Image 1: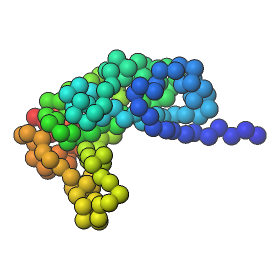
Image 2 (image 1 turned 135 degrees about the horizontal axis):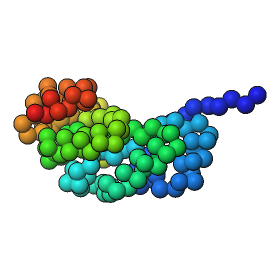
Image 3 (image 1 turned 60 degrees about the vertical axis):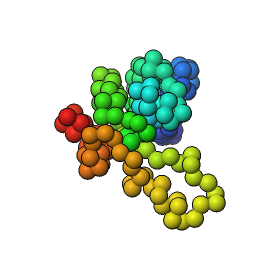
Length: 156
């Protein structure tokens, strides 16, 4: 007797171009792919050294839907120079495509190195690292992460 094992994985938007691979993944039991898009706003992406094309994101969403694989967008809040408007733009865009979103707080892990002590490393904890978003309190920032579905009310 064969068992069908359900599985999921994580990738980047630019790696969702091979339809034959996506089809094989679906046939093998893949039900969800979490995609680290971080933001839809080009300025946000530039500030964290990422270059994703929104057209590639839309193509990926449509391709996964075609094969009944959930597209789960991994987004970052608190990216350097990010604004409430850019967060709203990203969430509005993803909502148009009925994409589930998993937010996280930005942390510049690339600044960490193996010579850091425990105190230095603790400053990069996702739960405590926050440089601020204009006109968004820290409390509202945390609420946005934990209650993203109500982003329009939080970002008002």
